[in-house]
Length: 188
Image 1 (tube, rainbow, N blue to C red):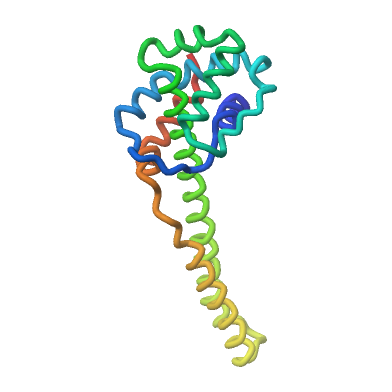
Image 2 (cartoon, rainbow, N blue to C red):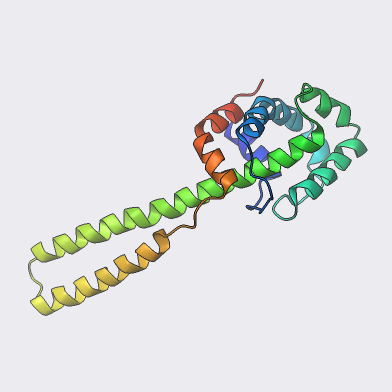
């Protein structure tokens, strides 16, 4: 199951992009309704589509969506993918949303990871500073030197913990991240 999700995300995952209009709640809800079916359709045709080198990590979502649609057309799969969308959106609209949502997921997970590591490290350093005072066998000078080093390390982790704010797309996706993950985990 995880491999299926990983393949889908890797196939369509990309970096955060700047777009004029943020994703709307309705965009995301519609995408969540059709994404599991499209994921199943992609997996069904994985062997036919895997050899195409379409880099979703770079470029405008609209241009990448057009390329992806062209690939589906070339492979004779466009009608099947259009049917899988159940009239809720066009293939072009799906690819643009898919790219934007996966970019936002990546942005959110990177921000969460960046924020979690320094916080854990800071907590450990703070505990070690407190424990340092209780440590026997060290001179006051040695304790002062170690405390200074730990405080310096603590300050460095604080700088790392200052994660840039999420984009509007990232904020919306973060709000629905567990629902998105659940929908992608279970396919029709």
